[in-house]
Image (cartoon, rainbow, N blue to C red):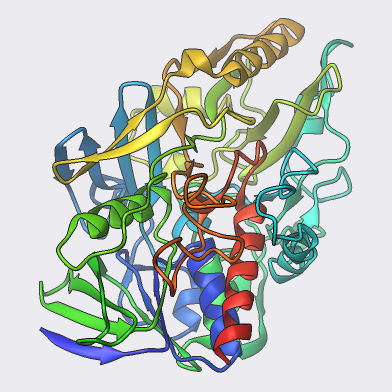
Length: 501
């Protein structure tokens, strides 16, 4: 067991962790990022000089690297520590998370939108000025080189091409569309063209053959590993991948303030400890909650948080499909997001159409690939109520979620059925929701009896401990929540930097 020191230790490297690392390193602090997953083998990461990389689960690598682990109640099965996805299954809800340096930004569709409710940040804490978070929205869009999706983009297919032949009815392409953090070509001649960012990081435009939820091998889909970590890597920020945090203990040293973070290196099993006065939890909602619960139960652990686990949700995520009669063009030849449609002009639910790029590389029978090539994935989301909860029993995290108490799911199912009725084609919606946008459980609130973190993201009763990921969100965004999380992470990190420097 060895020890080392840092000004700030960040646990996790998704939107929350990478953005926090970037902001704090630029402020002159020594930052250590501990990430349980590996660097992924993309063009940007290779150009950064990262030697140890794990593949994305395309082709036969899907057999070995698609799943990291599966959790069914207290039964936990680890398949491959370098696998990409972790699945949690509960009676009322499935939760899917990404394991990698860059976290969920490898598995997202690249959509950026503010919360559905314009007053989302209002009246959350008496000392919180909503403008102090909302000001980061434009910065994140600029950082991610995001552009609003329009018909002017050179795309093989989009929500407009798919709905062009539909008769007048309830469903129509949304206007405006969300922003997309995808480097799309301006013409067919620019497909797959490689360019170089500052610092020598290379990235290519979308080739419409593999920038899906399985990851972006060429970097056309922005991921936070090269957007936010690359500029500060070894310039104030150190990333240690394949390091799993096991617990957080109060007291950096005997009688000293701060924390000791215990972790093990997954490649060789060595146990280590890093000590710091400030810790930022950004391990993703499920793993952030697990660490908060577990560390509050350990001897010398965190001060108990009375509302930990309350106000949990899945952002109303519901997957579906629209089955086309022809694969011309095939949904394998597409961007990961095709756009959003509305029903009767309503802003809710948020229902997006996706593509299947790269899915044709998977080891599937011909008939399955033929059907997939004619299938348009649908992802619906909206504000679920937050009335669900998470709890911790005998070393395992459990979620109590009743979809029948969440009106948003019926709204999404109705929207999908409306698309089927208008097109005369079959549609489908999954029965048990699976969320890729779990939120809450360590929510922002005005006091310890109404939340876990304060207006700066600091955990009540645990000074110097912060939450910068979706676990701190006070409500469902109702839209793709990446922009909401990113703005919150900026706010947490910049507030901390102002006090620490």
